Image 1 (cartoon, rainbow, N blue to C red):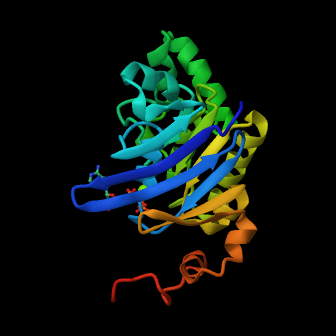
Image 2: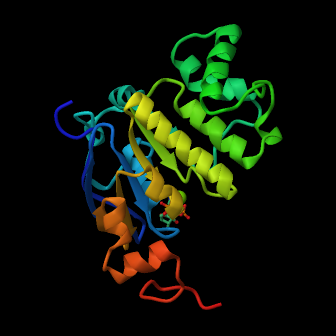
Image 3: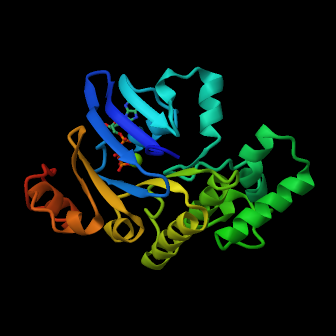
Length: 254
Ligand SMILES: Nc1ncnc2c1ncn2[C@@H]1O[C@H](COP(=O)(O)OP(=O)(O)OP(=O)(O)O)[C@@H](O)[C@H]1O
Ligand SMILES: [Mg+2]
């Protein structure tokens, strides 16, 4: 397509007196992976939720594949949402449903699927994330890493052009974290998916990203290729990416 796949322009969002986003602008090209890093509470999840249309911004534009979703009604928004897969921070699987029902949920709420075809679709999507023979289990019977991958299987169920990942590797062991990072890379390579990932796992960020943006105090403090971020001279960026308690970022006294 002409122009970027995602364009966020001067985005502002507050909750009561708390200013979360204070003028955020960036673009993501078709097929590109942008990773957003930043401390806990810096507004990473709220940013993704605005891009996917779950939260409305106070002002600013969010253009997805040429359409400003802040100006769309519910039907228009839903049409754009079909292009997007969203991997929630907390997996957000329905405990009352089987794994297969969870994975096929979005697909089958859009077009009628009988139980047999839903199961088949779920099985195929689960194999893409390396999960086999778990279709009839409940989410409560899965490990954290399996839940994350089921969340990804559900997000890719409809073959989205855009994938949004909220903390895809948080809480996983280092090996499983790398497995999920590899999976994110593979999905991008195979399908040319445009991706925004949110994480504070720097190893994963360096691996999966074409560019990295750091959110700080409501703004994008720095944006650039992984190597540029790694070599940033900004002391706030350096403190964050090296994970030090010493530096300009305020930390609680313990
Ligand atoms: N629905 C909401 N209502 C009110 N405040 C909210 C809401 N959602 C988020 N916030 C506030 O917005 C700020 C940013 O939250 P957000 O969840 O985006 O942080 P985050 O960067 O994703 O943090 P973490 O790394 O811990 O997941 C926080 O102060 C949070 O309390
Ligand atoms: Mg979050």
